[in-house]
Image (cartoon, rainbow over all chains, first blue to last red):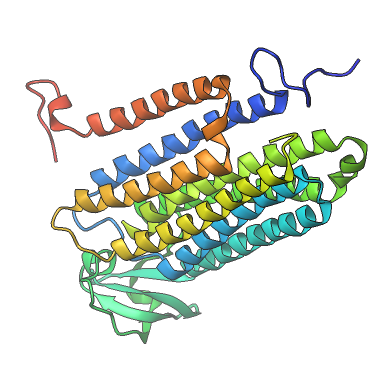
Length: 257
Length: 108
């Protein structure tokens, strides 16, 4: 006995099962990301004077990632429209672009994360800071390509228009009080940045896998049950649009404000 | 859209492309607006969120077809909006000094 309403909509709701299911799931995802956005607001407003990091992220890269995700969102819906008129080849091409965009997004995110993991901050025993990217680290010294600062606020909240001159700075290990990279443990800003974008990236990867499966190995269903196949493409597309929606809010909040 | 004609699908495709270009424009405007320094930071936040909300509406309404969805979906989303709105309201309310009981010593 087949499960009813996998393609035929229920008479009372007008929906097939998966459509109702995905919207219920997306509603729960709104609360998941909503809780993290709420945490961001509390952390940001509660941050001590001069401790919240500004201009830490690469705005051009973030903008590029936004454009990549928007493009993937339109290809996902155009792919579904192509299936509606029976054009499987066009669907294949457009959904292929969606998957490619997903890979580009994750690749750019990886580059951004790598930049953070190779960016170090040293607190010297005299209370001053050295901030920059790692050049060399030995048992005797650490060399950073960056600048020196007397106070943390010079690093976290640089004066607009003022650019620190970058040079190779050698710090003997004996002068180092504390050293760490700009990973999640660096400060509150990086903690919430990695949490928000990390969870979002996991959703991008998960969504891309599902779309890839339906596009690739799962495409056999187009021959056996085309209406159910179109519904699968629609449902995975809805999840993808949600992932795009989250980024539409993440980008200005983390990169621009 | 199941069972729609080629002509109907073509009309939808035109909407999708319009939304796509609107989203691109919205992104460029958002980045451009971030370089405007308002005297009050709250204005900057309000502008950024306003543009993000318009973009989100376009994605939800047209890409996700919410503009022509069934009542059941609207009911689910209405409760989502209620709880999300409540979450953000409680967040902002908890930051207000007035939320402390009278006589509380606020240690900085």
